[in-house]
Image (cartoon, rainbow, N blue to C red; front, side, top):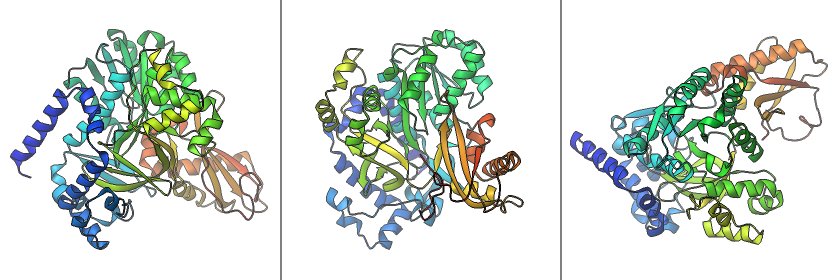
Length: 502
């Protein structure tokens, strides 16, 4: 692609974004078959991405033979292991040209080795629509002067810069949004809210759920009157309970959690895949109060993340309980297995199921202001199937903790088995719990507990750059509990050991 065509691509895509009303954009899926769109994306990627061409060749697939959606469904899924890690970065990009991407973000893998995710401005614009949907449908930003405070970590990590860019695009479109980027500096966040907040009709804080709660609680302790700022929250990277949402709403003075909160389902690899809407929140809150209904629909006794998604922007399939995504970006992805487990539910099927349980979320929202009811399909997500836990938006891997237990002076005390989980204290603050199995004949002591916690912390900070930069210092030290060998609750004998618990 030459200089002139790159310019034309930007001009055309940005003009379309600025001049297309949100309602028109969000109704595309009603007039375009998402399955046809997915097949067309496949052919575009097969024709323009060298790595995907090699992948098809490796699997003896002729792109011309893929003509129907049924053919598309037979394509082998791609993963980080079988695709992304097998090819040079440039060959994963369109036309093999990394230089045609203007931004690179970073995510950390299990070894701390970074994965790079290039993208171009035009890739961000389709994700900006997800932010526009939230700001317009939930926060009525078309009529309210809004201060958007980016509280995600800034730097090479994907969340902060991506969010800041998308908010600026919305301001370019004419919405009265003013942006400020303190990142995850709690003192600076509180300062800008107190000094700037009253100049606006509302303040939107964008960040990881446990960090935003920490900001709110610290503000209350310092005398911040949150109610006067009409705070809304945009979150990502973490599952939370509806009890958590209610508690935070109470502390903010929020009267309407369905319209004051929105969580994004997004990843470094695929961008924003879906987002909470007033409708999805209303439904999830019903399920939180009716666990029998949740179990009947989702098949598990835990509440998943529930969002709606635009199948034209990100096409979702389910295969063997795993979610597969197809979407265009700096690295286009076709049937990408992101290692999240979950499912999809058609809009009408969801409303029909709820009607059978005597609940009508549409009527409930229409009794309030009726915005945010759009006939998008739902995707529910139980999270990664590869034994990670998510803490302040950082993926924490068992391998990181293992290294901490393998240090000199510690390895003789322990078997190497442990269970890692994120827990909440009585005040709904999260902490990282690591329960460690002691070696035979070794007794627990406060000194051992402290030494192990310190070692795990050292290795987490060394190996996992997301942990080091996302998690506030006061929440980084894990709470270590020592249990005897074969402890029935955590280390039952003869059972395959799992290193994480949800």
